[in-house]
Amino acid sequence: MFTRTLLAIALALFSITAASAGDKPAGKVTEVFDHPLPNVPGKSMKVVIVEYAPGGASPSHTHPKSAFIYATVLEGAVRSKVNDAPEKVYKAGESFIEEPGSFHGVSANASDSEPARLMAVFVLDSDEQELVTPAGQ
Image (cartoon, rainbow, N blue to C red; front, side, top):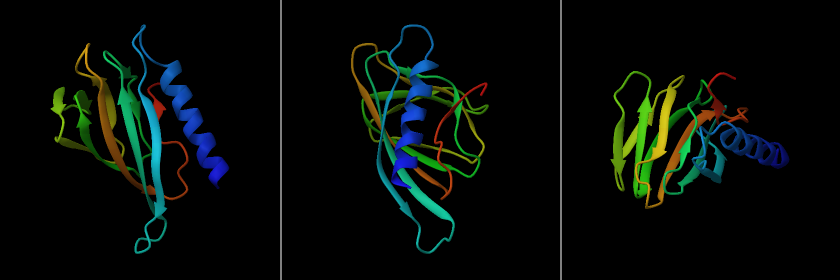
């Protein structure tokens, strides 16, 4: 199980890096928590930290269809566009959600000179291994 999770994270990181647009640096994703929800059989909570270098961005992507995601900006400012909502800049301390099945069209550092960091909390089916699927895959 642990090996499959590490493999899934490595593949997700590779997908983010390989699919990055232009020469902008991709976001670094680190899983920091993974635990089944004891009172909700079949569901787990996973937490990742996404770090963007100045000017960094992730490609457009989706997450597992079972995933409800709460994200909060820990440092800097992050540009985000989910589904048909307008693009918005979230500053440190601000949060947003992604409903199951959402399309994340923009996820990027809003600054070309300062780093940005966010924490994303996933509640999803426990058997989900891939947290990120680049658009078009």
